[in-house]
Image (cartoon, rainbow, N blue to C red; front, side, top):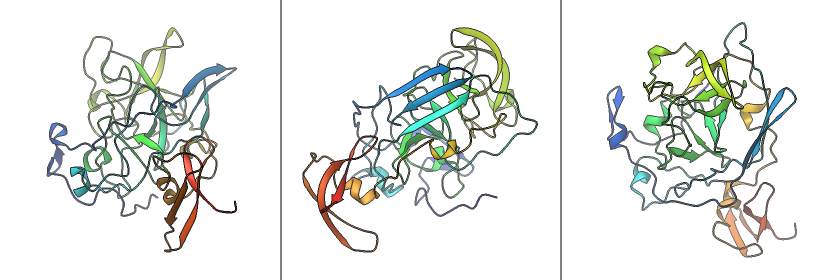
Length: 292
């Protein structure tokens, strides 16, 4: 059973009207931060599809996070997290098989998009529709508490997202995720899909057209993956193999600073820490206490 916390947006936006919301009226987090070191690679090795990168968006920017007080989005969603590079390494089955029973998706990562960004399930920490309630940037992304930048639904910054029948990502069980239009240009809706938000049909994989189960990105909740039809890779929902992250306060203290620059921050307990900005594994910098 999933226990929800009290995270997510502080208030409901004016774009939410009862049980519906208007995407055209929704605020977006301001800014366009470039990530020139963004990296994502995919290769086939034996019976595995290997995906690895640093979790930053390839070919796209992000909004400015943490959300600034001067940003109109701050009145709705005070996301205090900075975007931090990750160490993502997934070995997915090349030929995934449908399991005897579907399984629940976790809170957190359920797949990876072809631009290297993590895909999370459709819920925020309070158990609400994250795409509707949380305020994301113009690419429909934002970071969580460990700095992992992610999407909860469709992103215009993923190549092919609005094209016909394109593979735009992979779920953690190995099945592909495709765009919201079929081969004839017709938009796919929930009524076309099964309980897990997918269906069986032809998909171009590794240069060949194969008939396979696949999840479909849609404009309707739950947007991507409602449950796993296959068997997800063990531990993958936590982002694959990852190093221990520096505290968020230490990362924020070095935003915009050069390596070796003096820095300081306060811990959640109120203790003051002084040190220098140092490079950390996976990219980026953090404030490292003096003497370490």
